[in-house]
Image 1 (cartoon, rainbow, N blue to C red):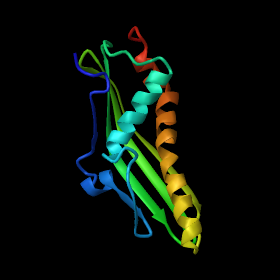
Image 2: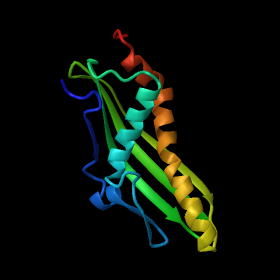
Image 3: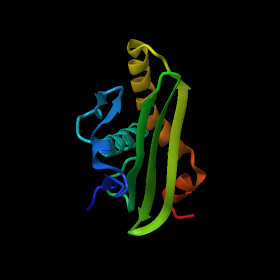
Image 4: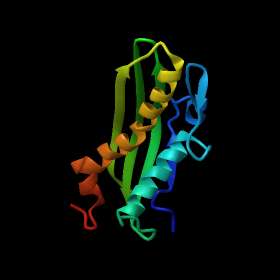
Length: 150
């Protein structure tokens, strides 16, 4: 039996370096757990599903995610973070959901690195749960994950 969260990868178009680290004013930001941001996305999804009592290792559903964008910019006057992933749900090997979701946030930048850097890291890391919240709120995702097909 394969893991219902069998694969979370970076998309072919995403630079491998951006899966391992982003930078804010030359300071590297590494993924929690130290592996990759795509692995962090998978781990976050798994944690959420288990916490909600929705994870079943024997499920005929498989969730796949592909990290497609991963950006952090902390300018002096403006800053932003973008995280995007393509999510797929397969039921017994057949795709029943396939959608690209994108989460972005802009905020006011700061000249002072001591202010800008921690703010950028906080804003950036908040985009992963926000991206997953988009997924969980998507009626098409919910329909695809029902225990009986719609």
